[in-house]
Image (cartoon, rainbow, N blue to C red):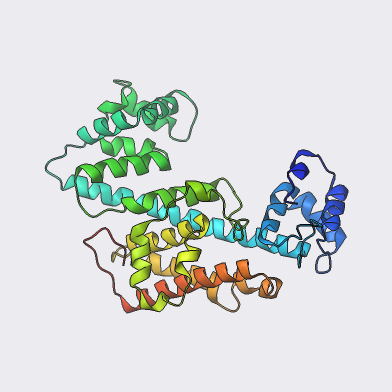
Length: 336
């Protein structure tokens, strides 16, 4: 299933089952008939088999150790729950970063709301073209784009409060970065790249839990030193394999999102929303009756999955306990 030739050959559902059986994938928990139904109606083979990357393969026989089809199904379902959480948190982070940006800009006597747009578009000409395209083609915000561009058709003449609703998630992150690099004050710039990557992966339904044994894009990945400092200062987390786990881009970026979400939403107006969401996440991951633990026996023999789960659930428990102590501070580019 990790063999590249598998990806280049079209297989019927019956052939997919045969392919898995030749690689020692078992059908003891999930019957072959149920597996066929799942492949027909719930998920497709190319995506499902990516989760097998978390399992050890005999280098001589190319057969898997301790892998049942049900384990792949369970990982795909857990992945769905995690992607949903990521998207919900990312939407909140995006919204409240916009709120903070607008508030900081409104109280900034050095910025009129137009200059920063001109500077931003000079550094990001593709954003300018994207706004024009939204005004001329059908999109959810085409009317808004057309309204603001009606007079000039020049995005650089728009105010920041006009343009912010027309930007993609990635372009807004760039605008946010330009503003806080120009006007130095508390910001989340060091964490934005990780949030963007994990949000985009979730939005495009990428498999997040397929790379716990062998992480993707490691050569292109760099850890956020500010977050490493936060984790390093927490005595409650010293028992964790922080260095090893945070080398995995998916784990690193998800943990980053957890901390940023928890910090962005800590003000009194949004604290209740934050606490409710963090409790939902804690229940999902940490409660004995939570979805993550429902079939925990499936992964008892897989150290990669168990170690990743233990690390992330420990981080969630740590954040939850910190919230209950109401210890939040602001003033440096460091999340507490």
